Amino acid sequence: MKYTFPILLVSLLVFTGCGPSGLRVFTVTGEVHYNGEPVDNAMVQFIPESPDGLGAFASTENGGKFVIATQGATKAGALEGEYRVLVTKTVAVDSSGRELPPVEEQEYSPYNMPTNVRPSGPPPMKNFLPEKYASKDSTDLTVKVEKKPNHFLLELTD
Image 1 (cartoon, rainbow, N blue to C red):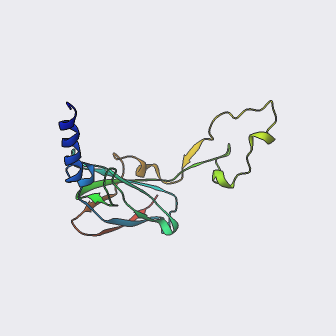
Image 2 (spheres, rainbow, N blue to C red):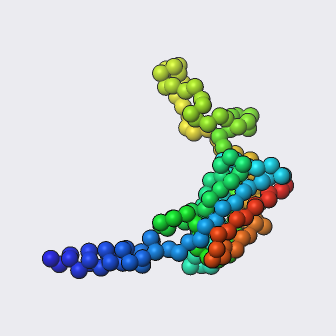
Image 3 (cartoon, helix red, strand yellow):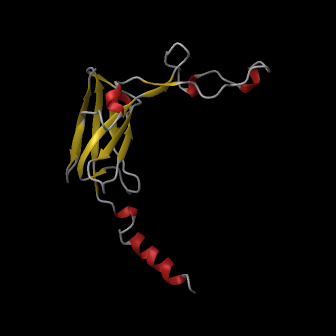
């Protein structure tokens, strides 16, 4: 019986919108282009300028298109406010720095490896976009999410 009130209080907060599901987010879509070409399979991060803001993230798909999401929100979108934008495309590379195919496309089986060879860990990773877009201190990309559907074209250059 001593736990009834705390459980009731938490349930009330969650179901009335005072918990994470009560976040008021606004639709944010966009496209990422690098030197005029769409960038697939990149990570887009919105870093809030406000200290009490929440970050948001997305992964680009075909044509460099993305839809932003905020952790804890019940629908896709971002909170109203100003953000610095980070964009990276980090992929596994071989020893010469060439991009490896995705794991599902590789012909790998632990059963066809020589017994004296053991994997030495994950392959090295490389960001294929300019490093300035990987840090909030160096990126020049900024956006302002407003109380409406938002669409941003993020143009990356060397």
